[in-house]
Length: 341
Image (cartoon, rainbow, N blue to C red):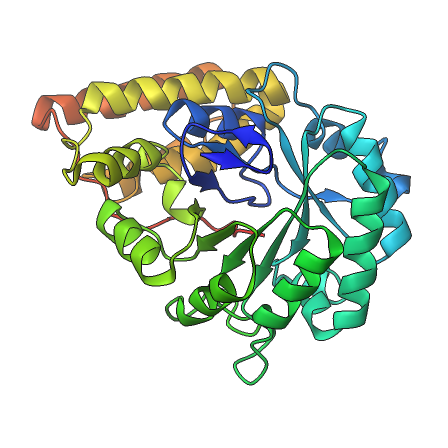
């Protein structure tokens, strides 16, 4: 797929998710079939650029190109500076967050709260595009801020006029948070209003659902978030299904064990043992969700305080499963607490 000047493996995107889409997870999803992975959002507050968390989020060493970094904020000047800061550190695509519904973000008029102020939207988009000439800028948004104000089509036109290269739209309003079912009519309408790529997002949990959403909306691509938590191979499954109309076999226990352990090793290396241990817990919970004995395993695993003990517990759990059945049937839903931005 050609996307804002880059040749991608396919039209499947990893949604930016706070606390999830760090460099290890992005790299894993790309290996598992994703064409592009967008980073978790980076603050536009220059006072925080020196923090350890921000430095980690802006770290792209060894990451498969192109690197897409999402920035968040409400001030056009600060967002322009944030775009330049990240471009200087390896970002090849800058993505603007107007999709996050979290209160701590929306209370400062950032994230999806920005959709209430179309003039400010235009000012932000123009400022960011102007700040990074030659680097494509994309926009992630929702269908609107509530059901009575689904203004994504209007903002999409503003975005295209401002020089935005592509749009990703979550099929819920800000008021919906992550409840109910995503709707795709608004995404389909946006697709008829603009000439830039439109990426559909929301409740894409299976290869069959992926095919439906593409056909229904006419979107150029799909963005997947929560459904990839603990199931990064969903990108490979969807890629295969879209190409052949056939499902891949369910993953084997030893395959999933190998993916999980490699992911944990990357987390320990990226964050260090202490933080890596804590971050790994939620990923292990997602990998094992719905499997026989997983609740008791997770409870015991969360009490462990060394990476060695954590790894041994994971090995023992999957060894036990392998003795029961060589194939795992994973639920086709995201299991995480963190949400797509």
